[in-house]
Length: 337
Ligand SMILES: [Zn+2]
Image (cartoon, rainbow, N blue to C red; front, side):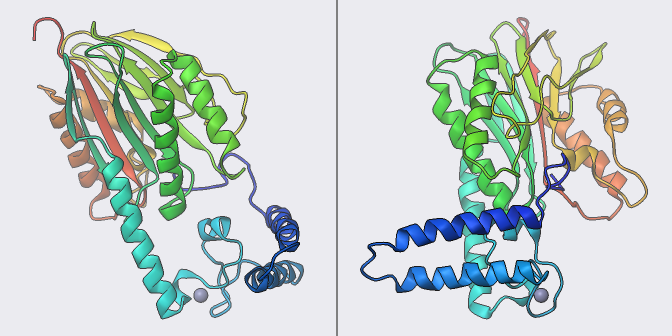
Protein backbone atom coordinates (compact mmCIF):
# COMPACT_ATOMS: atom_id res chain seq x y z
CA UNK A 1 0.00 0.00 0.00
CA UNK A 2 1.45 3.29 -1.04
CA UNK A 3 0.84 5.77 1.69
CA UNK A 4 1.02 5.79 5.42
CA UNK A 5 -1.17 8.85 5.71
CA UNK A 6 -4.15 7.76 3.67
CA UNK A 7 -6.54 7.53 6.58
CA UNK A 8 -5.62 10.79 8.23
CA UNK A 9 -3.45 9.18 10.87
CA UNK A 10 -0.77 11.77 10.77
CA UNK A 11 2.80 10.81 11.39
CA UNK A 12 4.09 14.28 12.07
CA UNK A 13 6.66 16.07 14.20
CA UNK A 14 4.39 15.74 17.21
CA UNK A 15 4.28 11.99 16.75
CA UNK A 16 8.07 11.76 16.77
CA UNK A 17 8.32 14.19 19.70
CA UNK A 18 6.11 11.84 21.76
CA UNK A 19 7.87 8.75 20.52
CA UNK A 20 11.33 10.10 21.36
CA UNK A 21 10.29 11.53 24.74
CA UNK A 22 8.84 8.13 25.66
CA UNK A 23 12.01 6.37 24.67
CA UNK A 24 14.05 8.88 26.63
CA UNK A 25 12.01 8.21 29.75
CA UNK A 26 12.37 4.46 29.38
CA UNK A 27 16.12 4.76 28.86
CA UNK A 28 16.51 6.88 31.97
CA UNK A 29 14.63 4.32 34.01
CA UNK A 30 16.78 1.50 32.63
CA UNK A 31 19.89 3.46 33.55
CA UNK A 32 19.11 3.19 37.25
CA UNK A 33 21.04 0.33 38.79
CA UNK A 34 23.00 -0.49 35.62
CA UNK A 35 26.54 -1.64 36.37
CA UNK A 36 27.82 -0.79 32.87
CA UNK A 37 25.64 2.03 31.55
CA UNK A 38 27.97 3.16 28.72
CA UNK A 39 25.82 1.73 25.92
CA UNK A 40 22.61 3.19 27.34
CA UNK A 41 24.25 6.57 27.79
CA UNK A 42 25.28 6.52 24.14
CA UNK A 43 21.68 5.75 23.13
CA UNK A 44 20.41 8.51 25.38
CA UNK A 45 22.75 10.95 23.63
CA UNK A 46 21.39 9.84 20.26
CA UNK A 47 17.81 10.37 21.46
CA UNK A 48 18.73 13.82 22.74
CA UNK A 49 20.36 14.65 19.42
CA UNK A 50 17.16 13.60 17.62
CA UNK A 51 15.05 15.75 19.97
CA UNK A 52 17.44 18.61 19.27
CA UNK A 53 16.95 18.10 15.51
CA UNK A 54 13.19 18.31 16.11
CA UNK A 55 13.65 21.62 17.95
CA UNK A 56 15.74 23.01 15.12
CA UNK A 57 13.28 21.82 12.47
CA UNK A 58 15.79 19.54 10.72
CA UNK A 59 14.49 16.23 12.05
CA UNK A 60 14.02 13.61 9.33
CA UNK A 61 16.43 15.30 6.92
CA UNK A 62 19.49 13.47 5.65
CA UNK A 63 22.66 14.96 7.13
CA UNK A 64 24.50 14.55 3.83
CA UNK A 65 22.04 15.70 1.15
CA UNK A 66 19.42 17.40 3.39
CA UNK A 67 16.61 15.60 1.54
CA UNK A 68 13.87 13.93 3.60
CA UNK A 69 14.76 10.47 4.94
CA UNK A 70 12.38 7.66 3.90
CA UNK A 71 9.40 7.89 6.27
CA UNK A 72 9.10 4.16 6.85
CA UNK A 73 12.69 4.00 8.05
CA UNK A 74 12.08 6.86 10.44
CA UNK A 75 9.03 5.10 11.81
CA UNK A 76 11.08 2.01 12.64
CA UNK A 77 14.04 3.96 13.92
CA UNK A 78 13.57 7.69 14.64
CA UNK A 79 17.32 7.95 15.29
CA UNK A 80 18.39 7.47 11.66
CA UNK A 81 20.27 10.46 10.23
CA UNK A 82 20.92 9.51 6.62
CA UNK A 83 18.78 8.67 3.61
CA UNK A 84 19.27 5.31 1.88
CA UNK A 85 21.57 6.88 -0.71
CA UNK A 86 23.94 8.18 1.95
CA UNK A 87 24.49 5.29 4.30
CA UNK A 88 28.07 4.31 5.10
CA UNK A 89 29.39 1.22 3.32
CA UNK A 90 28.93 -0.98 6.37
CA UNK A 91 25.40 0.36 6.94
CA UNK A 92 24.62 -0.46 3.32
CA UNK A 93 25.98 -4.00 3.71
CA UNK A 94 23.85 -4.48 6.85
CA UNK A 95 20.79 -3.24 5.02
CA UNK A 96 21.35 -5.57 2.08
CA UNK A 97 21.79 -8.48 4.46
CA UNK A 98 18.56 -7.51 6.28
CA UNK A 99 16.67 -7.32 3.00
CA UNK A 100 17.99 -10.67 1.86
CA UNK A 101 17.00 -12.33 5.14
CA UNK A 102 13.60 -10.62 5.22
CA UNK A 103 12.81 -11.75 1.70
CA UNK A 104 13.78 -15.36 2.54
CA UNK A 105 11.67 -15.35 5.70
CA UNK A 106 8.75 -13.92 3.79
CA UNK A 107 9.04 -16.41 0.95
CA UNK A 108 9.01 -19.28 3.44
CA UNK A 109 5.70 -18.06 4.89
CA UNK A 110 3.81 -18.23 1.61
CA UNK A 111 1.52 -21.17 0.84
CA UNK A 112 2.14 -23.28 -2.30
CA UNK A 113 1.23 -21.34 -5.46
CA UNK A 114 -1.32 -23.97 -6.42
CA UNK A 115 -3.47 -25.73 -3.85
CA UNK A 116 -6.39 -28.12 -3.74
CA UNK A 117 -8.74 -28.56 -0.79
CA UNK A 118 -11.49 -31.07 -1.53
CA UNK A 119 -13.33 -29.61 -4.53
CA UNK A 120 -11.63 -26.24 -4.29
CA UNK A 121 -8.77 -25.20 -6.56
CA UNK A 122 -6.66 -22.17 -5.70
CA UNK A 123 -3.91 -20.35 -7.52
CA UNK A 124 -2.18 -17.07 -6.71
CA UNK A 125 0.62 -14.85 -7.89
CA UNK A 126 2.67 -12.85 -5.39
CA UNK A 127 4.79 -10.08 -6.88
CA UNK A 128 6.66 -7.74 -4.50
CA UNK A 129 7.66 -4.36 -5.96
CA UNK A 130 11.06 -4.71 -4.25
CA UNK A 131 12.91 -7.48 -2.40
CA UNK A 132 10.11 -7.75 0.18
CA UNK A 133 6.37 -7.18 0.11
CA UNK A 134 3.72 -5.68 2.37
CA UNK A 135 1.09 -8.03 0.95
CA UNK A 136 -0.13 -10.85 3.11
CA UNK A 137 -1.35 -13.98 1.38
CA UNK A 138 -2.26 -17.17 3.16
CA UNK A 139 -4.21 -20.40 2.87
CA UNK A 140 -4.85 -22.33 6.05
CA UNK A 141 -6.32 -25.80 6.24
CA UNK A 142 -8.81 -25.94 9.08
CA UNK A 143 -8.42 -28.69 11.63
CA UNK A 144 -12.10 -29.46 12.12
CA UNK A 145 -13.20 -30.62 8.68
CA UNK A 146 -11.96 -31.96 5.36
CA UNK A 147 -12.15 -29.64 2.40
CA UNK A 148 -12.54 -26.53 4.54
CA UNK A 149 -9.94 -23.84 4.52
CA UNK A 150 -9.34 -20.20 5.30
CA UNK A 151 -7.96 -17.79 2.74
CA UNK A 152 -6.47 -14.41 3.59
CA UNK A 153 -5.28 -11.62 1.37
CA UNK A 154 -4.13 -8.37 2.91
CA UNK A 155 -2.19 -5.21 2.25
CA UNK A 156 -0.22 -3.58 5.04
CA UNK A 157 0.39 0.19 5.17
CA UNK A 158 3.79 1.34 3.97
CA UNK A 159 6.31 -0.51 1.85
CA UNK A 160 9.61 -2.30 2.17
CA UNK A 161 10.97 -3.90 5.32
CA UNK A 162 8.59 -2.24 7.77
CA UNK A 163 5.56 -3.42 5.79
CA UNK A 164 7.01 -6.90 5.38
CA UNK A 165 7.52 -7.16 9.13
CA UNK A 166 3.91 -6.25 9.74
CA UNK A 167 2.94 -8.85 7.18
CA UNK A 168 4.82 -11.57 9.08
CA UNK A 169 3.22 -10.30 12.27
CA UNK A 170 -0.25 -10.72 10.76
CA UNK A 171 0.71 -14.19 9.59
CA UNK A 172 1.64 -15.15 13.15
CA UNK A 173 -1.58 -13.68 14.58
CA UNK A 174 -3.79 -15.62 12.16
CA UNK A 175 -1.86 -18.84 12.61
CA UNK A 176 -1.98 -18.66 16.39
CA UNK A 177 -5.74 -18.02 16.48
CA UNK A 178 -6.68 -20.91 14.17
CA UNK A 179 -6.60 -23.56 16.87
CA UNK A 180 -9.35 -21.68 18.78
CA UNK A 181 -11.84 -22.58 16.02
CA UNK A 182 -13.58 -19.21 16.15
CA UNK A 183 -16.31 -18.25 13.75
CA UNK A 184 -15.20 -15.84 11.06
CA UNK A 185 -16.61 -12.63 12.58
CA UNK A 186 -14.98 -13.37 15.89
CA UNK A 187 -11.70 -14.31 14.25
CA UNK A 188 -11.67 -10.91 12.47
CA UNK A 189 -12.44 -9.06 15.72
CA UNK A 190 -9.62 -10.85 17.52
CA UNK A 191 -7.07 -10.38 14.75
CA UNK A 192 -7.89 -6.68 14.67
CA UNK A 193 -7.57 -6.33 18.42
CA UNK A 194 -4.22 -8.13 18.55
CA UNK A 195 -2.91 -6.19 15.55
CA UNK A 196 -4.08 -2.91 17.11
CA UNK A 197 -2.51 -3.62 20.46
CA UNK A 198 0.83 -4.75 19.11
CA UNK A 199 1.76 -2.31 16.36
CA UNK A 200 2.73 1.32 15.92
CA UNK A 201 -0.25 3.65 16.05
CA UNK A 202 0.28 4.65 12.41
CA UNK A 203 0.14 1.09 11.09
CA UNK A 204 -2.94 -0.48 9.62
CA UNK A 205 -3.88 -3.13 7.14
CA UNK A 206 -6.73 -3.82 4.79
CA UNK A 207 -7.56 -7.46 4.31
CA UNK A 208 -10.02 -10.06 3.19
CA UNK A 209 -10.47 -13.25 5.12
CA UNK A 210 -12.83 -16.00 4.12
CA UNK A 211 -13.76 -19.56 4.91
CA UNK A 212 -14.54 -21.93 2.07
CA UNK A 213 -16.89 -24.81 2.93
CA UNK A 214 -17.06 -28.21 1.21
CA UNK A 215 -20.51 -27.46 -0.28
CA UNK A 216 -19.31 -24.47 -2.30
CA UNK A 217 -20.34 -21.81 0.21
CA UNK A 218 -17.93 -19.02 1.03
CA UNK A 219 -18.11 -16.89 4.16
CA UNK A 220 -16.19 -13.73 3.61
CA UNK A 221 -15.24 -10.66 5.66
CA UNK A 222 -13.52 -7.61 4.26
CA UNK A 223 -11.65 -5.08 6.41
CA UNK A 224 -11.55 -1.98 4.20
CA UNK A 225 -9.96 -3.85 1.29
CA UNK A 226 -10.82 -3.57 -2.40
CA UNK A 227 -13.93 -5.68 -3.06
CA UNK A 228 -13.42 -9.23 -4.26
CA UNK A 229 -14.96 -10.22 -7.56
CA UNK A 230 -17.17 -13.23 -8.06
CA UNK A 231 -16.60 -14.41 -11.61
CA UNK A 232 -19.24 -16.91 -12.76
CA UNK A 233 -20.47 -18.19 -16.06
CA UNK A 234 -23.47 -15.88 -16.15
CA UNK A 235 -22.78 -13.61 -13.28
CA UNK A 236 -20.24 -11.07 -12.11
CA UNK A 237 -20.58 -9.64 -8.65
CA UNK A 238 -18.53 -7.37 -6.40
CA UNK A 239 -18.37 -8.47 -2.78
CA UNK A 240 -17.89 -5.30 -0.83
CA UNK A 241 -16.14 -4.36 2.40
CA UNK A 242 -17.76 -5.33 5.72
CA UNK A 243 -15.66 -3.21 8.08
CA UNK A 244 -12.84 -0.70 8.48
CA UNK A 245 -9.13 -1.49 7.99
CA UNK A 246 -7.50 -3.35 10.86
CA UNK A 247 -5.22 -1.62 13.32
CA UNK A 248 -7.23 1.60 13.62
CA UNK A 249 -9.65 0.86 16.47
CA UNK A 250 -9.36 -2.06 18.87
CA UNK A 251 -13.13 -2.48 19.16
CA UNK A 252 -13.92 -2.53 15.45
CA UNK A 253 -16.45 -5.19 14.41
CA UNK A 254 -16.60 -7.07 11.13
CA UNK A 255 -19.60 -8.34 9.22
CA UNK A 256 -19.59 -11.56 7.20
CA UNK A 257 -21.15 -12.23 3.80
CA UNK A 258 -22.23 -15.72 2.75
CA UNK A 259 -22.14 -16.57 -0.92
CA UNK A 260 -23.06 -19.81 -2.65
CA UNK A 261 -20.76 -20.51 -5.57
CA UNK A 262 -21.94 -22.45 -8.61
CA UNK A 263 -19.70 -25.13 -10.08
CA UNK A 264 -16.90 -23.41 -12.00
CA UNK A 265 -17.32 -20.03 -10.26
CA UNK A 266 -14.16 -18.17 -9.27
CA UNK A 267 -13.64 -15.75 -6.45
CA UNK A 268 -10.96 -13.25 -7.43
CA UNK A 269 -8.97 -11.40 -4.77
CA UNK A 270 -6.24 -8.86 -5.41
CA UNK A 271 -4.30 -6.03 -3.79
CA UNK A 272 -4.15 -2.41 -4.90
CA UNK A 273 -0.96 -3.12 -6.86
CA UNK A 274 -3.45 -4.23 -9.53
CA UNK A 275 -6.32 -1.76 -9.40
CA UNK A 276 -4.22 1.28 -8.49
CA UNK A 277 -1.47 0.50 -11.00
CA UNK A 278 -0.97 3.58 -13.14
CA UNK A 279 0.38 4.01 -16.66
CA UNK A 280 1.06 7.71 -15.99
CA UNK A 281 -2.32 8.71 -17.46
CA UNK A 282 -4.94 6.63 -15.67
CA UNK A 283 -5.31 3.97 -12.99
CA UNK A 284 -6.10 0.39 -13.94
CA UNK A 285 -9.30 0.35 -11.85
CA UNK A 286 -12.06 -2.10 -11.01
CA UNK A 287 -14.13 -1.82 -14.18
CA UNK A 288 -11.22 -2.85 -16.39
CA UNK A 289 -10.63 -5.81 -14.09
CA UNK A 290 -14.28 -6.78 -14.36
CA UNK A 291 -14.33 -6.67 -18.14
CA UNK A 292 -11.03 -8.52 -18.52
CA UNK A 293 -12.14 -11.24 -16.07
CA UNK A 294 -15.39 -11.76 -17.96
CA UNK A 295 -13.66 -11.92 -21.35
CA UNK A 296 -11.93 -15.23 -20.60
CA UNK A 297 -13.82 -18.30 -21.83
CA UNK A 298 -12.50 -21.24 -19.82
CA UNK A 299 -11.46 -20.07 -16.39
CA UNK A 300 -9.19 -22.20 -14.26
CA UNK A 301 -7.75 -20.19 -11.34
CA UNK A 302 -4.31 -20.15 -12.97
CA UNK A 303 -5.67 -19.05 -16.35
CA UNK A 304 -7.70 -16.30 -14.73
CA UNK A 305 -4.76 -14.94 -12.70
CA UNK A 306 -2.40 -15.11 -15.69
CA UNK A 307 -5.01 -13.46 -17.90
CA UNK A 308 -5.32 -10.52 -15.45
CA UNK A 309 -1.53 -10.20 -15.14
CA UNK A 310 -1.17 -10.26 -18.92
CA UNK A 311 -3.68 -7.45 -19.26
CA UNK A 312 -1.95 -5.44 -16.53
CA UNK A 313 1.34 -5.72 -18.42
CA UNK A 314 -0.41 -4.51 -21.55
CA UNK A 315 -1.93 -1.62 -19.61
CA UNK A 316 1.40 -0.62 -18.01
CA UNK A 317 3.01 -0.60 -21.44
CA UNK A 318 6.56 -0.65 -20.12
CA UNK A 319 5.96 1.37 -16.92
CA UNK A 320 7.32 -0.44 -13.87
CA UNK A 321 5.21 -2.05 -11.16
CA UNK A 322 5.16 0.58 -8.41
CA UNK A 323 3.45 -1.33 -5.61
CA UNK A 324 3.34 -4.86 -4.23
CA UNK A 325 0.86 -6.96 -6.14
CA UNK A 326 -0.96 -10.17 -5.30
CA UNK A 327 -3.80 -11.84 -7.19
CA UNK A 328 -5.54 -14.97 -6.00
CA UNK A 329 -8.31 -16.99 -7.57
CA UNK A 330 -10.40 -19.58 -5.74
CA UNK A 331 -12.60 -21.89 -7.76
CA UNK A 332 -15.29 -24.30 -6.67
CA UNK A 333 -15.39 -27.28 -8.99
CA UNK A 334 -18.76 -28.40 -7.69
CA UNK A 335 -20.33 -31.79 -7.30
CA UNK A 336 -19.94 -32.72 -10.95
CA UNK A 337 -16.15 -32.41 -10.86
ZN1 LIG B 1 20.93 11.75 1.66
